[in-house]
Length: 291
Image 1 (cartoon, rainbow, N blue to C red):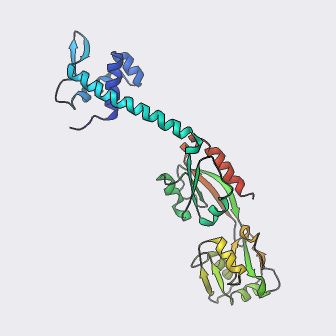
Image 2 (image 1 turned 180 degrees about the horizontal axis):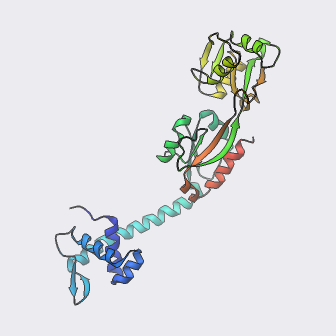
Image 3 (image 1 turned 180 degrees about the vertical axis):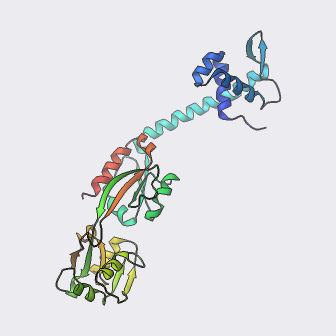
């Protein structure tokens, strides 16, 4: 036989505990007719009668008493397990936060974000962040794309602007973005974040350069691309943030009028604020952009 739905079990246990329709319906926050309907539906799940009437009073049959004790014992264990689970969740050492985003952004967060429990960093493509949050695969996602945010919350994190980075050993002068500079660069190997760099194409279009670029290496990690440039593999267009600690390179800032800066956001579900320490984790992530 099938077990009754939880709503019917709750109505059955509430009524049999207080033995009064008015009190039970008030306890459950439902109407008395709704409670009467629940009890009738509950009884239909069993081959024997659960209730009999003694005068106007609805009382349990001997079989009904056994059913009550069975469900009550199960729910008592459930209450104990819920209390244990709540205690564990409130213990900071048992908290496990999952943060998702591009690998290079997670790299920035690695030493900046800490909690008494566990922080797990999950590299994902930006486009998959909103659905991953809805599927509860992680707690916080870093993304610049708000087109699929829907009911998720979004809080500003940091912005990217871009710079051209050139191996210093190439000794390309002058260090100023211009048609002549782009004519020189298009002849040289390029290391790219994507198979087809939209930013590169934007500059080629801006300066009316028709020559096909030479993509030497493609790797979706700004940190590694920046190291490729430092080692002389090729030049690249990278977020200015990643040029700060590079050695043996020349950096040319790209005006935001040519390539607009990109706003990144912290995305999360509203109910996550109920978790201990969640607000503090968000603040740590925000401050990591100031490092």
